[in-house]
Length: 470
Image 1 (cartoon, rainbow, N blue to C red):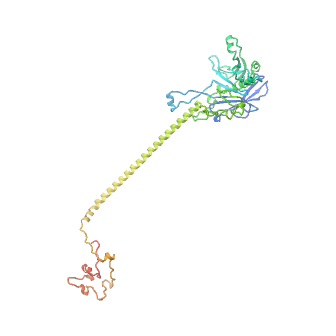
Image 2 (cartoon, helix red, strand yellow):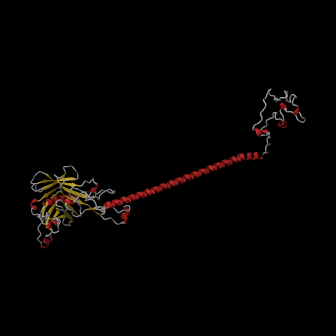
Image 3 (cartoon, helix red, strand yellow):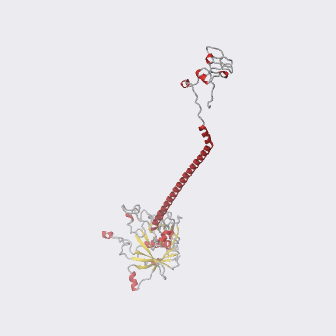
């Protein structure tokens, strides 16, 4: 602390224990620390916070009161046109990288006012500094004239004189910053020419990037209507300079995802108060809060195209498109490779079946030839035999379809035909027989069996059964 009697703002973690919230505590004339302002950053877990830095200054006792805010988007490196780099990166340009911006804008409310803070690069014997201007006259002069009421606010009028302030480094390696008043924009060039430029007046000190001390004795030399606005700009500007220009990585400052997947980083951020709109760097001043609608300010007018995506989002889209294209081509090649393998497998299976069929046909032909060699001579011998005599079938068999019934056998082994006219034995063995069958030239057979010539003429006689083969 520079002096306990000077108003000093200490930047500490917020009492609500939220990581991205901080609080300015005020100590004046050695008093205890009291809540003064609430410094809130956008939640990095939200998708709308991608690729942007946003911070706002609220009242500690009334969170609905928004004093000022900053919305800053990074600048990006231009894509390379080297064919070697594009080929090495898979056919797409290398990933763009964020570039440290050289300015940011503080948006004040009630009254609405924009304060642009520009970074001026240092030289070999001078350190870099950040410069901003604030109007000497901010509020309208009360008047009953309609002509006066139709004019623009003095804060945005080009004819209003502005006071120039600069945040300077104590040294190239030091983190302490000093805010000085350098004069007015209407007399700055004139003073340089005449050599009568007044020395710079120290306004505030930013010690160790943790506490802001306002040099109260010199504040009486600042000729401006809005000292409260100057205090807000000093606190919020110091916090933004610490976050942006003293950070270790711009990827963390702007909440840039390191993965190559597309993210929703083109949305408008931050503290969407129900009474005040949010604007970003390079936009035009918005009208008063009474005529603004927070629910409509993010919607595009009918027929107007949405704003183009930032280079990183466009690169992510191109990368994802190239990845999906490669994946589709790989799947197509894999599908064609699978189809070709299946065609080859089916072709090999058909060829194997054809070979197996031919092998079985060859085996069958070989076995047939072997059997032909074995049984072919017997078939020739059978074919060369004389034909067998045909059997004489009685004429009445085809008519009846069956052979005549045999007479019942009686008397043991002797067959005796039954006749109604005689009961004598007809066997030739005993010398008996029918006189009709004892003709000349015919001899009776053994056991009374007759020859074929006699059996044909006598259907009642029993014939000897002949073999079917001979």
